[in-house]
Amino acid sequence: MSLSGKNILVTGAAKRLGREIALELAAAGANILIHYRSSKKEALSLQKEIKELAGETWLCPFDFSHQRPRLQKRIQSFVKNLPVAVDALVNNAAIYYPTPFGKITETAWDDFLTTNLKSPVLLAQEIGVQMLKRKSGSIVNIVDIAGENPFRNYLPYSISKAGLVAATKGLAKELAPHVRVNAVAPGPILEPPHGMSAALKKKVAETTLLKKFGSPSDMAQAVRFFLEADFVTGQILAVDGGKSLN
Figure (tube, rainbow, N blue to C red):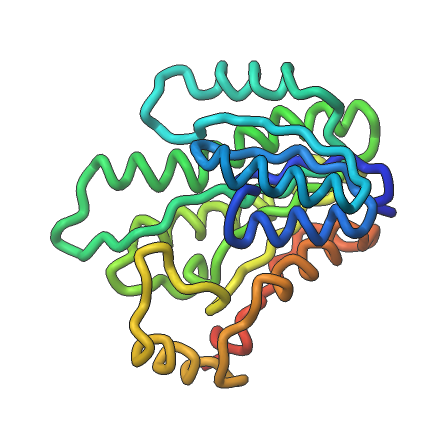
């Protein structure tokens, strides 16, 4: 699929990996629907940058967390009120924080499973049905290598991403043959939001075969590949410097 002129919704687009993905797709000629929850300042900055690339862009605020009831109804309303039809969806929005074993709470479970799994699947369903009617579309989910090899002290997060791996393959079947669904699984790309010491960062880099962290552009290019590759569906691509082989 050529991205030129296509309308692509990127969730969690205002910062970090989402921002890099949005800019990569805009540089390829796509129009970007910028989803954000609370990072309006960053979203406006991204919108300005995309406009400088001559792309169309719209701000689409929404809260995918479990804090409010009737999530499915709210997602249906969110999709119905989008300014344009969505040609491609990048499910990037997610939460990530440690949950040491023995101290995992039900609140944490609800937080991770709703934000990282239920919300992207419900969103993919709503938009996927529209794509099926048009017999065209592509969805890319951002998962994690933790979905295959869970991180210690991050059990609910790892399980939520494992669920999204399964959802990717299931959605590929449900939406075939007209809509392709794939996922990118990052390894060490960015430091976690809560920070990382230089010593720990070096230790993590050593766990990869390439002995280094990747860059957000590595992830963005992988997302672009999946959106453009018309004969690829149901696949999970690890962008992890070979960490998952260690």
